[in-house]
Image (cartoon, rainbow, N blue to C red; front, top):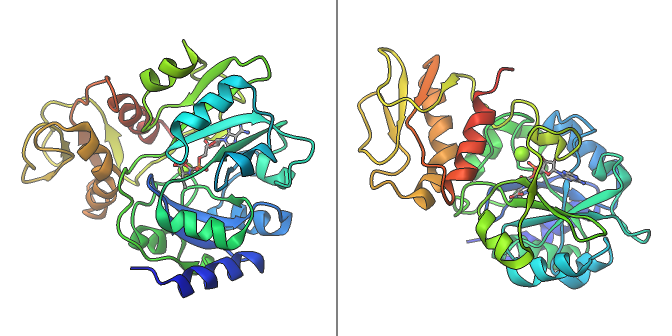
Length: 308
Ligand code: TXA
Ligand code: MG
């Protein structure tokens, strides 16, 4: 349980330009005052994140979001349907936006998300402005779904960690860009499924691998120290194994014994970290189906396996 006084303390740390790690429904975030270039600069440094890779500004609701960006009808509809929740909208920045340019990586757009996690919402309410928050891991490393992961990755670089339970969903928000003409593009698959987005705004365009789309999505990302080998039905001797739809093997763990994608998402990052900690040089991963939440899981695994 997180006490209200602890949230107040965290809001104060943010106001003073400090860094606060907090739980969201997807993964833990590393928060800074999005309106302060100085605080945002500290955030980039703490993560070791390249400054061209922009941050998500977290806001309480649509009303707060409208102050930061231009909402055409498609964006309004998506926000109405999926906020608060695991959807990030990349929208044209409003001239009145209070989000520091540095947080937007020099782009003319801003990424906005209203999280549903009660602790994240309480923090946003107490702080009273947008909070820039990437996942609370070292840049390029496996995302953090527990306070222990946050401390292992960022340690002393964080001023305060709001200690909660494991993040319930386990993979990052879906990112959709909506331009001034209402053209909607899927930049990152996530917990809100492609089909759910398309039921609101029609067919999505997708630009995998194209420059600028979502800078953080291009390079190797979400990566453990071990090398990853994907779509492996039977691991080679000496490899750690991440199973799916089967019980945990002696040399590994299972994402979901019964083949449940939601359970697999919740386990993904913690299991990758745990297998990495065994010192195995290769983690072989079972085939994950591509439908539903499998799209997001396969996306993260492919990036974790990408050459570095
Ligand atoms: O679930 C989540 O989204 C978590 C929690 C903490 O909210 N946050 C998260 O942040 O995953 P991060 O920084 O790890 O990933 C944000 C992604 C990056 O790939 C970044 O390039 C992209 O969003 N992004 C941010 N602003 C953008 C913009 N203006 N245009 C395109 N992509 C943008
Ligand atoms: Mg991240």
